[in-house]
Length: 114
Image (cartoon, rainbow, N blue to C red; front, side, top):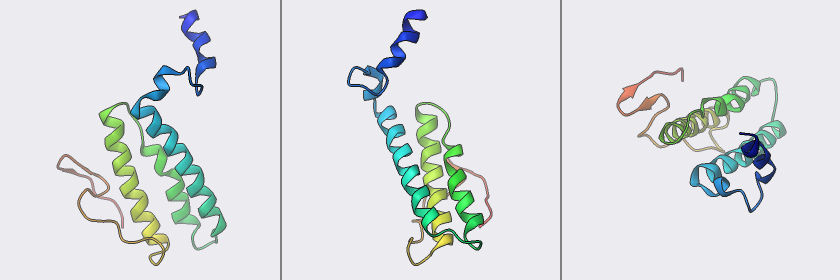
């Protein structure tokens, strides 16, 4: 275990063999997308947009798990984010496509407030 602990210095470098997996690449892109979205929301923040902007900022907390569980949660979180962004500014963000709705995965529907 001590040897593995020293491997932390390799994270994010070209020698990080686990960083090449599709899941790790997805996680890195999620971080970049999140920071960009927060910067975008801060530019247009007002007392009227604060509640929905806060909900958008909390969406990544739904992206939990590993493997196929995380991929499903990311899909749900992206759908939820699209719904919230449409509520925030319908002219800038189009209505999300119907199909997989927030709270619905493999036929189990969980309702959310619209």
